[in-house]
Length: 292
Ligand code: ASP
Image 1 (cartoon, rainbow, N blue to C red):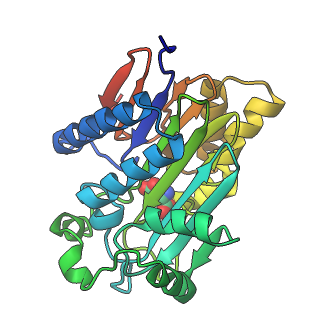
Image 2: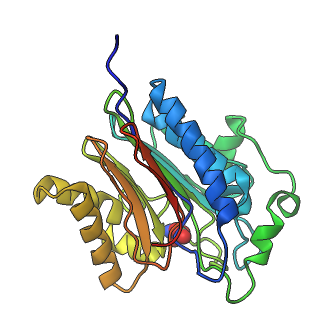
């Protein structure tokens, strides 16, 4: 008989939730994705495949400010950001301010696998994705959800993102993050989500995906800081995640992150009002939650 699988998985749907709203629909969808990711990991799927599959679903569902749920920028255009990192190889791929493609995380994966580069932006990114036959959006006004247009009213969510981190049965770690970014953002604005080290990180110690006010996450280099604290200060993933987030908060930002370490420990700290999140491990732990 083979040894039981050891795996861990966490998802987030952004740190934008406010208490006036119900997130039952989002939580039910995340619970279903958790089951799907758990089944993949239990069957030995690589962590990278699992985080990409789950982030693609989070993009496609239109419930979060990423992929289909994204809102337009101040110029009325949809510019999306995404990145992923494979901890086993330290390979990474990203796209920023990408227009016209359904799944930015699939585009980021193609950058990682098909080019010697990490990050493609603008017209070059679009030409590359088209050459890779990645799925295009014909009419953004038709494709992006009415829920996203509702969100651009004053007083609604300020931001949102989706992400996934996993530790697979072979001990590999991976992280993926995708976002429509801040609502009403300036044309050309790029947040932390596509920046390796700021919004996404994975190595042999941990995999991290962040959500929140990206400018502060960039200035605190939050995702890579979790790993640095584990390496240099010998902190647990919980202490390192809390410390990296506190450093970001001290600059004046808010948000949260999900992180998993090489032993399958999961940390999901946030300093915002809520963070849509879900996690499960092979030892039976499982939770889907938005507020504390
Ligand atoms: N971090 C994202 C950005 O700044 C937004 C978010 O996570 O809600 O683009």
